[in-house]
Every structure is written in structure tokens, then in C-alpha cells.
Length: 431
Ligand code: GDP
Ligand code: IMO
Ligand code: MG
Image (cartoon, rainbow, N blue to C red; front, side, top):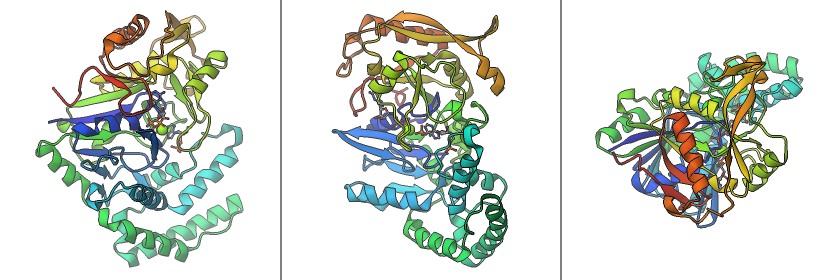
């Protein structure tokens, strides 16, 4: 059977949650491998909306095991609340459906506060983070100062390390931000109390996932954020603090590259971005406003209005390469209905020079002007279309042009937020 990684190819919110949920009828397990509750993955089933921040998007299907790998950073409060909400709505009735790596790092209260205070201080130079403590938690992980679930087992050592860390943090915090000092005892007790509620989900996820694959199960790895938010391959420093690309699935779970059968990228039929940072095809005109309104482009996590623009093939070409994509899924095609003309950015221009690849330098990227190809649009409402041949000819031309430019097949088209509003062209789980 197959192990498939699904990643966002843009700046997040491509519709990963919807697509993962759609595949749940063919898969045995869904694994999150990076990020934290900065993610907001939306699933709509029978008109009922679920937004997941930490728990993998397979959770609405009771036969699917949902796994949170070591690469994820976990806010215990958010995890507990998400579990409670799901259980209350009749999901996650069997605790064996959820598995969490004891090696996943925790987002501690001081991480959240530091994230918010830093952003405040930066003013107009801020990153526009989700304020969930993601960056500071990954910083501590890399600096070897983080706490994992398994580090809570030995309470004495946890207390000693926490006390030493908080004494140092308080010195800096109080001085720099004039805030109240953190209390070791409060954090110690509340962390352990919360841990006791989720301890039952802990299990070595590297062993489990390797076993599932060798047992011939279908496993889907669910990326969070998108390629242009990757800490190495994105629009640094306006990125998140993890590897969002396919490679992150290997380190974030503990599997080898030889076990992966395919990597599927998800792209909106246009582009959006939340937070600050470069966005070459961003629109500030009526078309941009229309994309925002028709696409209901409001952040699933923070409620911020998303910036909107035309599809950027330079960004997608980069995503095809750094992820080694074997297939592409286009979402939100229904949103493009009614635009007389649709534009595709094929390259950038700086002065008289043509730029074909995403510059890694921020200043260079900021100077890039998008150069577009214009294609005729379509007026039909396509949100109920079930077959490829019922789609307008101009839409066929749009997707053919994207495939030809990127040299990759589009394997699924999404035409609405609901489970079932999609047209499958090639099933990635069938070879
Ligand atoms: P994710 O973070 O990649 O899972 O994406 P989000 O859930 O943050 O944002 C995608 C938004 O678009 C959600 O509100 C989805 O319900 C919605 N959505 C997903 N696919 C489609 C589609 O094909 N058409 C429309 N109109 N909405 C979609
Ligand atoms: P999903 O999984 C869109 C953005 C933030 C900010 C930058 C850094 O739903 O696609 P962070 O809080 O991670 O330090 O913020 O990354 N960002 C996202 N944008 N979708 C997401 O997740 C995002 N997660 C983080 O807006 O620009
Ligand atoms: Mg999202």
C-alpha cells in the first residue's frame, strides 16, 4: 500500500485539512509531523465545520489512527481543549485513535508570552506570527532547553531544570518587557496536571509508523503551513520556525525516505498569505478584494483577513522542486468563477532582468514585479460539478497550462469546502 506526504505549496491555508479528510476513506493513519497550533485546518462535513489546530485531519473518521509526531510542538491547553471538543461532538470515542509522540516538545506559557511581547516590540517590522509561541518553542528545542512530554516523567529533574530556566528567563523578561515574573510552582503543577490528562496517548510514533508501513497500511503525512513558510526554503525571515516541506515528515516522525511512495502538493487556484512578508502577486485592486470575499479568505486560527493575489507559478515551481512533488491538487477553483480574465505569474522582473526562480534574499524578492500570462476565465458555477468533462473549456485550459508549466500532473480538483465537492483525476493511493 502507500505512504503519501501532503504539503502546502504556498503560504499555508491551501485547503490541506479538507483534502486529508477527503482521503480518509482509503487510509489507515494520518500523521502530523511539524508545526503546532499555528495551523488551522478546516473540514466541512454535512454542513458542519471543524477547525483542527493540532489533531490530524483524519479524526472525523473513527477507523483512522491520528498520530502527532515528535516534530510537532504541543500546547497542552490547546490539545486538551481540542480533545474535549471532539469527544463532546461524538468523535474520538476510542482513545486508541489518537497517538502522541513522547518526544514532541511542549509550548510553555513563557513561549507564548515571549512570542507576543516580541511582536509588540517589533512594531511595524513584526513577522505577524500567530502568537501561539511557536518560534520560541522551536528555539528552545534547538538550543536544547526545551521540555518534551517524556521529560515530565521524572518530576524531580523536571522541576530542577524548569526552576533554573525560569530564574534566567525572569531576569531577562522582567527587565526587558517590564512584565510579571513567571512562577515556577504554577508552571510545574499546571504542566503536570495537564500531562496527566493526555499521558494515555503517549507511544513511540517512530516505531508505530514504521510498523504500520511494514504491515502494508495506507499512511498519510499531513503537513502544516506551506513551502514558502518553511524555515529553510521559505521567504525567510517571514516564515514559521519548522521545516514545512516534505523532508520535515521524515525527521518529524522518525522514518526513512525510502518508505515514502509519493508527495502531493496542495495549491489554491490563486494565492493567499496571512501575516507580513513578501508576496509578489498580491493584489490591491478590485480583483484582490473579490478573491478575498468570494474565497472567504479569513484566517482559520487568528481570524485575520488573508492577503490575496493571482497564482504564482514561480512559487509553485520552487515547491515542486524542494518537495519532490509527484502530484498537485488545486483547491478553490470555484472561487475563480466570474472573473473575465485570470492571470498566472510565470516569472518576475527586476529592472530589465527576468527572474525565473524565487530569490532567497528578502530585498531582492521585494523588488520582484510579477509578469503575467492572461487567460480567459469562466462564468459557470462549478461547485456541484462531479466530472472533469463537465468543466468549462477555459478551466481545462487553465489547469493544462499550469501542468505544462510545472511539468507535473494535477490529480484532484476541489470546487467547494464540503467533503465531496471535488473531482478526483488520479488516486495517489493507487499505483
Ligand atoms: P489549511 O490550513 O490548508 O487546511 O486550509 P484552511 O482550512 O486554513 O483554509 C482553507 C479554507 O478554504 C477553509 O475555509 C476551507 O473550508 C475552504 N476550502 C477548502 N477547499 C475549498 C474549495 O475548493 N472551495 C472553497 N470555496 N473553499 C474551500
Ligand atoms: P496552516 O497549517 C497560514 C504564518 C503566520 C506568520 C508566520 C509565522 O493552517 O496552513 P508562527 O506563528 O508560525 O511563528 O507565524 O507563519 N502561519 C500561517 N499562515 N497558515 C498557517 O497554517 C500558518 N501557520 C503560521 O501568519 O506569517
Ligand atoms: Mg489553515
